[in-house]
Length: 357
Image (tube, rainbow, N blue to C red; front, side):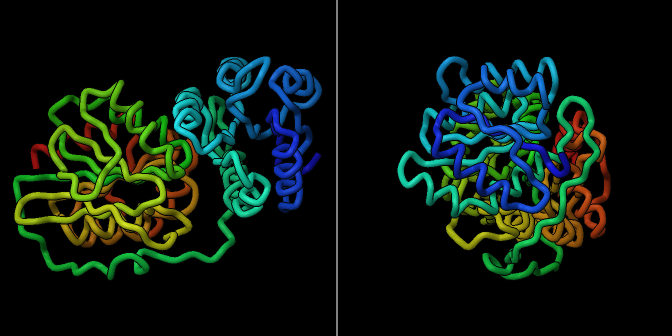
């Protein structure tokens, strides 16, 4: 069977029908099986193993988390979580991402069929990104380029004024990441001591999921991690995660930095957008900032990282070998905005160097 072979595991017949229809309509994607629970999935997988699994997390007989952990321990396979937009669903999905899932697609409890149709592009992009992801054993198939029209950071704030910023003793780190970034961020942030530079993060993630993601990181890190709120100060030992569905900008008053959380259009098909954060960091911090771009599909953050570099900031990319998807860092390197590419396990040291600059 040619193309990306997908298995859908969801106890809702409506979800299975709609997801199958949407994915089969996408060029290069074939749904081989759509089953109601993990036990049926394991029977089908004895005959044909899928390239990507689209998995619900709340199911009878065996929950999605148990199934996911079993897959990752026995035969690592890219998994896209299809989860409900609820607090419980968000917390469970964080467990799934920690267990090795590469992306989340959300589904509401009401108007499900229409919502999934409206989210068709997001679903197809997530499956394509997963098919090119490195999960356990390396899978070198590159994700295809995005095909739909997109806005750039001009839609949220004007281009950067590249005049040198006044140096301050306050340093800031801006991090952008997407597919595979939840696990990568956990590895970086858990390596940081309590005394670390102030950090602002855009992780592409749906609304309602970023609070649970921040809470999970806070429970395992020495630094404090929280979902950002408007006017939060950027302080040493604190990590601010941009809320899903909002853009986050770095601002400066005197020698102090804070974040502004705003509405706005999708930028590079994302809200929050890494380009918006990086452009704001170039404008507000200049040479007082470090930009870090990590694993993810597409090119969000590449233009903003070049602006940070031109404004005097240090810029670092995660290297190809350690990325789940080497899309965003690759594009940033290609455009000339990256000073250094380093393995994932070295990024925390780059961050700590900000304290000595």
